[in-house]
Length: 137
Image 1 (cartoon, rainbow, N blue to C red):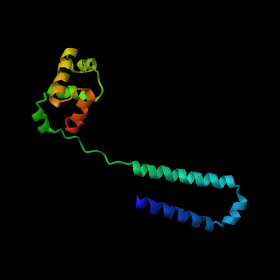
Image 2 (cartoon, helix red, strand yellow):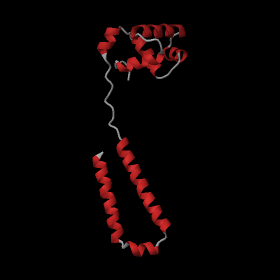
Image 3 (cartoon, rainbow, N blue to C red):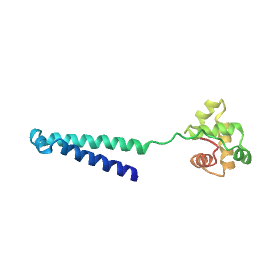
Image 4 (cartoon, helix red, strand yellow):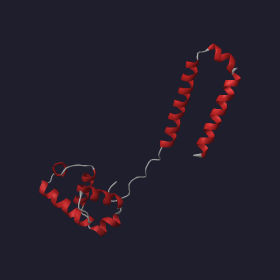
C-alpha cells in the first residue's frame, strides 16, 4: 500500500512539473478551462483503472489436491463423490440422476448417505464441509 502511495505521489509531482514546464500561465489563457478538467479527469480515470487492475490481480490457484485421508476416514464411495461434485455445481436430484444414469431415488439415497457421513442436514452445509475438508474443488 505504501508503494502505491509513493508511486502516486511521484505521478502528481511529475504532473506539477509538467504544468510548470509548459508555462501554465500561457496555456491557461490559450485553452478553455473545460479542456483542463477533461484532461485531469481522464488522467485520474486511467490511473484508477490501472491501480484497480493491479490491486485486483490474483495469483492463479494451485491445482486442486483431493484429501484422500478424509475420503478414507469418512468412507465415501466413488458414486457419492460424483453426486457431491454435482451438488456443488448446484444441480437438482433429477439432473444428477440424468448425468450419472441413475434413478432419482438412488440419488436421494446417496445424498442422504452424504448428509450422514458429513454430519450435516442441508445441501449447502454438505458442500461447505466438503470444500473445507478438500473433498471437492
